[in-house]
Image 1 (cartoon, rainbow, N blue to C red):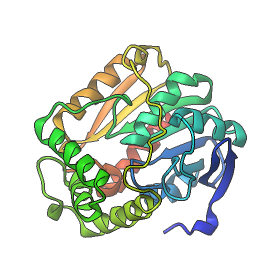
Image 2: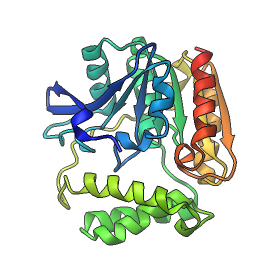
Image 3: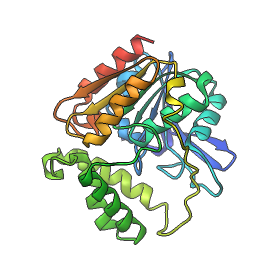
Image 4: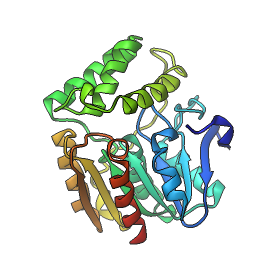
Length: 271
């Protein structure tokens, strides 16, 4: 695992943003899913860094990045970091929340982006319509906001299996990895604390303006509504396509890292 001592810190307008900066070449920014941190990409970082400058970021309130004390947007944080590092235009690779951040950044700051990969992600204001997935989201919110961390963790780890598998069908090493990151992030927060995040709205109307290459990468066992939305995203952007990774759910980068890495490298070569 990445040691905290290997991280760098950018003094943003509202606390430090932690990131790993390794390798040389065209910049690739890795954006993790909710409740975890840059370590989600441990199987991707060394492979990508062989030929690219890899910047793996801890989003605000996650990992080693400061919690928010004032209103913020993910895309604004990322844009400020990229400008600080003189790392744009960059390819953005995001999983779940990270994919939404990548899309928002491509919309808001097109000059900083040369291509985006969205894995397990759609627009940032996506809402589940699949009943099982809606129940998972509701239970996740209920347990987390009430301070039932054990209950929440069970729900959170269940997402790795997806709506058609139990978490018992996922490699326990993946679950341990997710658990460690999630507990680290959740420990930074208190139940009922104010959520300073300002979500973007009406994003679908702006996706057609994205003119950089877009790739959606999803596991075939992920939620059907998310898969449909990813297909829609790839078809709505000006230059988009979609890829499915068989036998995986929300984290194809963890379940089949070699296949995921090959897909991403192929995309990066096309830019």
